[in-house]
Image 1 (cartoon, rainbow, N blue to C red):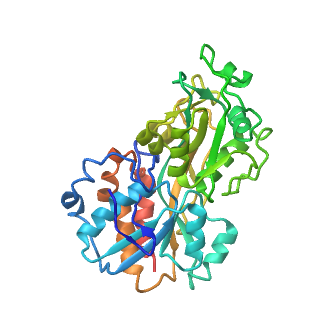
Image 2: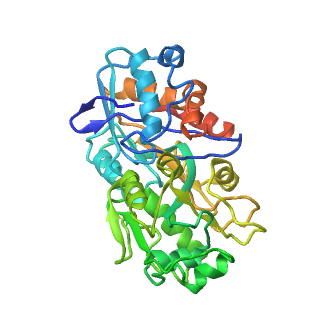
Image 3: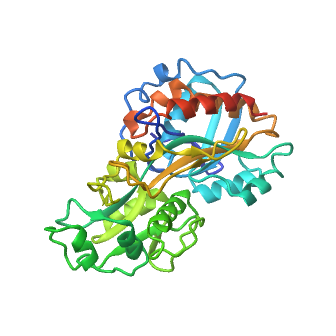
Length: 378
């Protein structure tokens, strides 16, 4: 679906879970790559239980492109229920969203990583009597997509991925790749590694995984949202990386799972040290995210993930997308709409419209905590 644009901002929304107790995200980009949902497509039914609670006017937001397609669904339903309200979301990447939030240009930001200390400090200038807090809304796998004719099932591990993205491995028939794929007919094609050109929580989460599991091969700053390595080819947003991988033989890149699904891009299974390689799927990501710990305090729900998990069937390259808003000090003219929209997105009604689009609802325990926090925003 395409939503109206205003001031360059595009409407979007958030995502969901697969099994109770864990998050999962597979997201789509600005070109709306996902299949329509069964519930989300029935706007009148999906919007029937939405409470507008004084929502009015226009709500601007920006950030993570990982949640674009979920935002599309939620905004469509919210606007259908709350006549005259416009929610405009710009999927410019987590870094760009946080910048706009801390400059007071948007009511909330989407980010695939929790705020850094300096970003929280900066938010206090906008949240006059409070600070920016992290509200988890969706999580899921970061897929490693590739295009390599004749190779349908590719297995890689963290050290090999690190060397590929750092251009230390440049041919597909490299010994390290062949060892992980016995029997595969690997061509001598040059590897084309694509990465995000914009600051991205997706990039940061991939970096955290590589730094945690292959520190000897990935020596870059794991906190960086900008691509840290000097090599490789760049594309804008998850949709841009997916498009580049789809169009280039011998390519590899990273993006949320639904970009791979929508574009029919093959994805890598990860050798984690478990008994079998783990495929990128909502269910497998949920097994990894199930062990996430809340590290935030008060109204902040920042989570800590175990990227080095070796649990059976747990996909380790995962992220959690947060909506970032002021706990106190929100602008009075947008506060009712902000609370009504976030109340809807985290509600049972908001969560249940998303699974058919490749998202999964929040686990019950986390969702309950977020539902308790949103009404307290002031």
